[in-house]
Image (tube, rainbow, N blue to C red; front, side, top):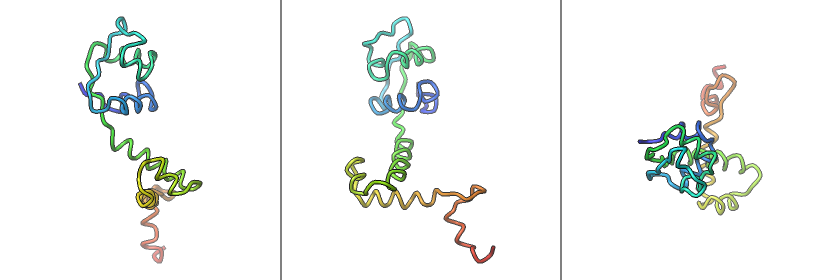
Length: 133
């Protein structure tokens, strides 16, 4: 059974869901029943017993395919880079995120299109008809 990322996040929180994606994304993971859940089971070693118990209540006794969540992880990374670019250099961010300085600049420039005005309209379009206002 596929485990949608949003269901994993709802069950155990974003941080632990992303840890599970990082460790086992794209593979099947056995979710033990609550009766069989132990501290040393593979799932509990990744996300902890409390979170594993939550998944056991939802999917105990089943094999779950953990999503890769590439798009989600990339959007989150890009958002973090844009926020940190205000106070850190492109070189430092490139080293940390294992990418090039050029890619950091492209991510930051691409984020300018994400800005919106008061009505939720993309800010990038506001300048197109500035003379018409």
